[in-house]
Image 1 (cartoon, one colour):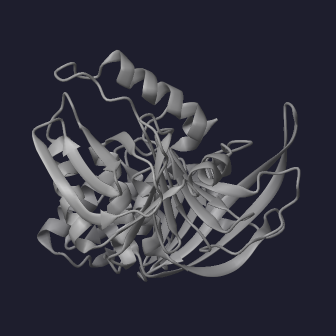
Image 2 (cartoon, one colour):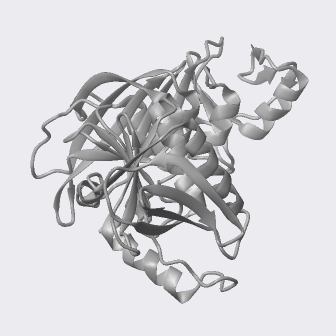
Length: 390
């Protein structure tokens, strides 16, 4: 795990352009105490004490050049207001043109912003358990982040084909009923916080603004992680899909299987082979006479040491990559994983869980061999999306 945020992390936050700082090129803001990187959804600040005359914006390109010469930046103010870094005079831009959208979340005026969720601490590594189920560039923009649900205390990742939940990580807070009962943490920031890991202090600020259709609530997720302070605008959405229905429907499926390390190894081996088959990335899990096997087409078949007590046979097809992600996430804090199935040859989903982590991987119809993404497989995915992201 990375345990400190550096200028290179700020470069990544800023990206290649500088509109968030009010400049044409990507810049980092320095005020003598902090270095700040910003984009349209967040500001990230680290301690950076410097002897400079006034706040300034310095282009990322020039900072990168200075870092090549010396990994430690040495700032040397000049009498005419210029600035040298590691002996090289650099270009500066005025921060006066910084947009209000950036400045307001950098400062968070307490007369305007109010505490919606009081500070609490959490393990930043828990984000990693749900990241793989989060949407990426999904047209349903509200899925491109993690949902912090303060009604239930859960962190949720959902993309319509799978659902990952970590329960009892957040405090349960009674937010006003007319407002969304959680916040959506943007995906890029969630990944950065997951990489940092460690104990993180989190709180949520809120303000009201008048919009064209009435009063709007804007929220900023504030995080102290390692040596950095994050101010993150939530993904603006009035709601989030009712993931609890899909979760409650599948977490109590009748066939309960406990997988030990040996069973998991066999299952992941077959799923890994399936992932290399671009035309047929599926695995089939079958149970009969209380014995379980997993196969990829008819080429690779493994019998699992696990047994199940509930009678009746079952057969389910699932994407090998999705199943692998769910099992790896469940294994994060232990070696035993629980799976649940339902009877029949067309189950709706597969439950995977361990301790306070839960995943629902939607089942699909097995495409015909060599058919690639067949119509039946596409239909199965399309039908599953509303079930998890409606």
